[in-house]
Length: 432
Image (cartoon, rainbow, N blue to C red; front, top):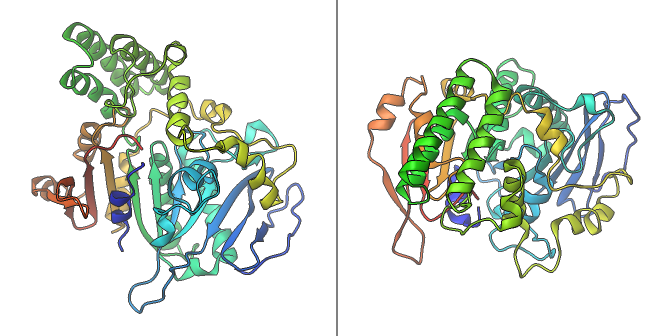
């Protein structure tokens, strides 16, 4: 996600508030902000003893052109268990980098931004009892919908600004279920908000289709040979069978076994970008989920030019700025307990939720990096073709349009669009 042009192209183009207290069991939000009104942040107790943290940035370029309402992007990080308030904000699309210097490519130039540490237990969000961690994507969606109902009151611009749910990796499953939940709440008159669209970046929508894509993709780029490919295909079929029989926890274990096998026989290919080298020997011997997290943090916080670390600023200067973070809470790059709590849901597909959004007329954008393995482009193409949406046959029959990024004259990607579904192929990009 280090190439801002394609992602920006996907968008269909506060006063300082004194702290209020929220005791255990209270549903009153805790909100603070900057004196100039450009930022708001706070906690919403979405369930008793379960607290979601959010951070809103008002764009300095915000305009109120008649007929072109200024958009708001709600960023949903993946993992599951990774922090949007940390990674998405300071490492990807927010106004400042980890050295707290302005980022030229911030999406704040095009939209107001909301980052949330989602689900509860991630980053600055917390639960007072581990039994309150979510175990399904839909529980996450219920909590996040409760958050949005509070934010409509805390962030008045949300009532007139179309909201776009933009997701990365496992965050796409959050976006699918949250999008459907928000659409239902709006249709029922329970939430006064305009859902502008849902954008799914290299998103884990159909674990089966991604798993089945690994062998043909790795064979085609010479990272597996035929012998290893045959065994990897058998392992992928096992995952497919376990998903079909509803053994989702076993499927997650078998999927991890497959990733470990691929690592061993591919020279430890980087599953987030097959042109970006290999894991080091220490990381390569770790469990697959740990390997993935190692690469995740390396991509988002391993730049040699950064003198600060993401964990350092989140537990230091940022925590001091926000003031409302509990003193004993330590921000983590990824909360393994959150991941483990979702273990039985990780391999469940969310294609039906995308169908539901399309049936409501909600704009859905899929964007995928050409070099990704873990959520490969051919896997994304496969699940899109499984949609039951009445426009899918026409969609797949249409030619792609090429994309260019000035000043380069070369093709940087392709897009196919029909009605409220768009698919972007981003050339030269990996998972991020």
